[in-house]
Length: 284
Ligand SMILES: N[C@@H](CC(=O)c1ccccc1NC=O)C(=O)O
Image (cartoon, rainbow, N blue to C red; front, side, top):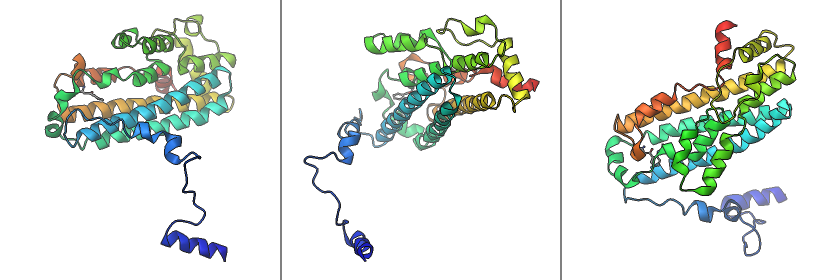
């Protein structure tokens, strides 16, 4: 009977036991700090569509924050040779990447004519300066010291970026997991200067080939390899969708902040992640 009462209440108004006094207890908005998040959309123009532009990028930065949180923990887990717990985190990263890729479709509803009405208000700011995107690229092994120069004016951030540049990537951790399983890997692929981009190595390819040729024996490493391929693949799709969305909106105009725009984004597509996991496919 009590249940029926409750249902009636739901239809006609608030449920009886719902908390309405938040003087002393934490509410939904308090917990999520919505006061900060929802008052951080400051348009530089009075153009209607600038709100879309701001929110797309802010939402993407939030998702990137979660990707970094997951990638950091997954890398540590792989480093400790605890592969199973990393799989769940890596699957989550792939799903978030899908969300990020999809967000380019929302941005594509912005037409060139609309964008040109407020583009000059963006000044020298550019997606090129997204430090979280840079940290994701670093975490996946695409290191580049030159990309740090745009953060020189922010001392703390610059230091954080320097530190990230010098840390092993998730792929370095994965190579260590191959070593831990007794697969022979050249010393130069194991103890290297982490601040440098990962360069393909024949012994690493051979080790992955051993794993992929005997999946029964190396199931967990095989699963790790495929999870990384998922992430590398999605990262390429994200870059591709970014590039075509930008091309659709600004064509071949030079980018704000001095980047070449679409040309730069096209070039980024040549930087592959986890190279041996791709090259082994030709040899298998
Ligand atoms: N480079 C772009 C602007 C841009 O990238 C941007 C500027 C401010 C906030 C986010 C941006 N883009 C992100 O992908 C342009 O030239 O129009």
